[in-house]
Image (cartoon, rainbow, N blue to C red; front, side):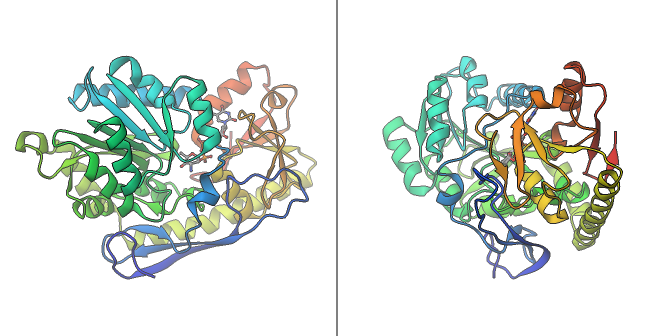
Length: 404
Ligand code: DWN
């Protein structure tokens, strides 16, 4: 295999075994799930981390069960990102904003009152229907070079193109970025947000590895990708959501000089990454992955062995990797609560854990919740307590196994 960004040689760094696609939740316990290799590999050239085996996007996203949760931490991130966009002059009241991978349009709905026009693009027909019901104009398509030109021909060229947590989800990032470069006007801005690989590695977030996440981006790998399509990084925003995310702001390399002058923080973040992102960090990440597996397996066995009830909290894609890599099933964890009606009544693949509504967590609830949605720890714990459950404790698996 070679790096899908720069073409250089890649080396395997972590094999999580044969795993089911995380968000393909089963409709019954007996339904047989298909499993595929989940192997992370690293590029010698641009330090891109990628999956060795990429599944077909249509299988993953045509009917998608992940709907962006309407969470307080996401809402505050939307406000901070929007303020940054307007504060730095990347967007204004007349802007035409196109977001691909827009899901149900929560961020676009936040932007809509402050810009000229918003348009969502998402490949999941069921998700597009929900976005349209909520009043967000949404085209159902995978964003690539062809569809980008078609969208621009029918809607005009958007001055702001946004891609949040979706550019890692496609085995051909060149097709996506080429599409952006084709339609972005000279004074346009491209805003790409992803989980930040440095945070993923530093916080032992091995559960962020699942088939949807085909790339784990760094500043270095993103700049390599952008340069191949005439895009130049001009700004970076770091954000705490999803375990630590990075927002890249890029313009066409032929934009006017004043627009291309990078913010000082770009050099600062680039330098911090150059110091920290190396093979030694990857080795420690791999060691800690196996340590978390051993520690969590032992803790769950001990608690269940002493007749404690344990449920998972959050039918997350991360949770599917965590549970299945550690080997936790419905025998130890019979239920997983989740706020997404689409997911309730289904089963986490391979772990065979039934997903039920959140209010089961509030009526009595178990002795422990295994926080498979650990990235929302504070708001979930606050919600459970405020709903009257002062009894259940929480097992937090990342960055290390802990009980709170
Ligand atoms: O990259 C991706 C990230 C951004 O979102 C996608 N490939 C898929 C998805 O990954 P995830 O499922 O690990 O993401 P979340 O946002 O951590 O999933 C949260 C899950 O937890 C949802 O199913 C909703 C649920 N939840 C809940 O039950 N109660 C969430 C909150 C905040 C809550 O209070």
